[in-house]
Length: 155
Image (cartoon, rainbow, N blue to C red; front, side, top):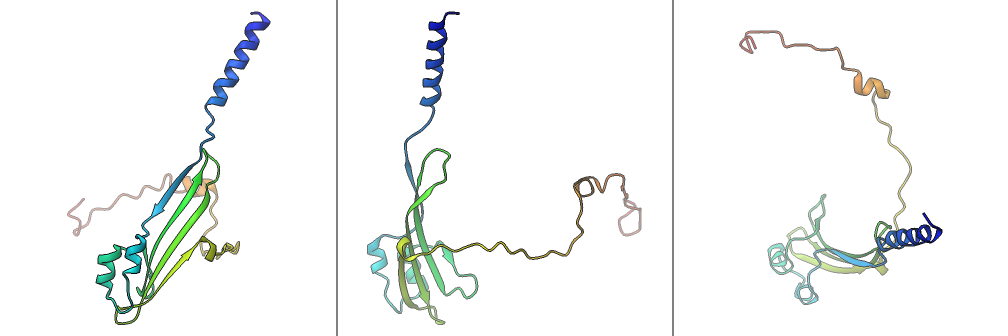
């Protein structure tokens, strides 16, 4: 094989390899934030059913008191396998009073938010510290068939 063929093959392989790499960003929007006109239609004193008819089902309902409905969406910029970057976030919180009527409506964006640091603390768990072999092979050889009794009809 000549030097010319080796150089040509190397350049062709490099071009083929690089053509597989994507340099195109794409934006992906997730969530169900209602349109602005629908948000402006929500007034204080409306019932939960009226809000659901206008805005649709919320993304999240607070689990403790069911008084806050959250509608949200976010837009992420992605490039191939790299970590996505959030470029836009919108949150709409509708808070209800004890009678199920709208108390207030709050809109937030990514600019209003802040980073929450995750704690490295761990909660201890009461259990045996089994090793790999004990965990996956500890039950081998411990076959305990069901003994026939009157309650299971001899099975």
